[in-house]
Amino acid sequence: MKIFAKDRDGKEIEIEGREGWTIMEMLREAGLPITAECGGACACATCHVYVDEEWAAKLNPASDMEVDMLDMALAVQPNSRLSCQLTCSEELDGIKVTLAPE
Amino acid sequence: MSEPIETDVVIIGAGPAGLFAVFELGLLDLKTHLIDILDRPGGQCTELYPEKPIYDIPALPIVTGQELVDRLMEQVKPFNPTFHFGEMAAGLTKLPDGRWKLTTDTGKELVAPVVVVAAGAGSFVPKRPPIPGIEAYEGKSVHYAVRKMESFRDKNVLIAGGGDSALDWTLNLAPIAKSLTLVHHRDGFRAQQHSVNQMRELVAEGKINFHVASVKGLHGADGQLHAATLLHHDKSEHQIDVDSFLPFFGLTIKLGPIAEFGLNLNENLIPVDTARFETEQPGLFGIGDIITYPGKLKLILSGFHEAALMAQAAFHICRPNEKLRFQYTTSSSNLQKKLGVNG
Image (cartoon, rainbow over all chains, first blue to last red; front, side):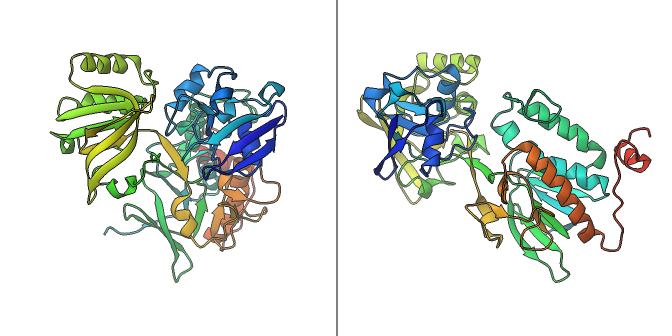
């Protein structure tokens, strides 16, 4: 599956997503400046991304834990998600995400 | 200024690696002082995931971040370390006698032959909202903590966030502020329910304002705010009068002054050798998540191992004329005496 990830400066790169890995892991592996300081434990809100509207609706809804954690993220929008809580799968092939400001 | 504190080892960071270093150094009769910017021990374990279970600590099939720290505190108790909480290691210099002098951001000075950097990913600092020009107002009209409530009396106060800090200060400052506006990105809060209920009552009584919105712009001059622009989800904007802005989005980690310690950092990590866990500067050691070496894993258990080896090397620097006697806690009456247990 492919992930189209837009950096904070607007540059978009295409990343090959690995089934079962999180989008946060793929963004980090691709060298994008995503902090993810808790390492994927849904405990820090520093892997915050905006999911393109057309994709946002197709995702599993955020868990209570993720919704709570997003309260600690900056510049949250209705399409905000924590990328450590999004798992790569064929259904998400072509997903577009943008790194939120830090 | 008060006299510098002299000790054997100064440890920067009171997370799991720093705490276990107290234990390993203590077995070798080395006294320790720890500095941490947080107001309690545990670092990321207590700040980021106190309630979350950890499954990869040897012999503890499951333990939460807070329990792990509580147990480490119990384990180091016999060695009576001194904690300097709420302080950041700000400067490090080498003295003519070969010892290190570490200065904290409150001006405290600690002198020791050995300094151990166990700072994890760095210092916890408040998250700064990405609002253009916010830096210019920090300290004067943008505050990340409330030090004196009185300074908000008769002010137009804007609070952003949805956690306990945001709600607690909304409730505390509402009676003394001229006006108080709370903004949050959703009409739901992670804060305690009773605080949320109280906040909603104040809104219903017209005593405070609440908007589902974000702060888009700040307006003022010479560090003094006059107004803020709020952006609503329907993209509409409106401006409100603001004298003081309090953003409460929790903490994030920045490397901070360690970057200025003259270490040859590799992607914000400190290279060390794997026999002594010493940096390229003699007497300056590193353990835990902040260090790098071939094969390094950022695991708590790795930090424990690194602390044990570091302590052996640190002993020879602190006690150059003494012979290190390697002993086991199970059989050494000497070590058991230090631990306060019966041999």
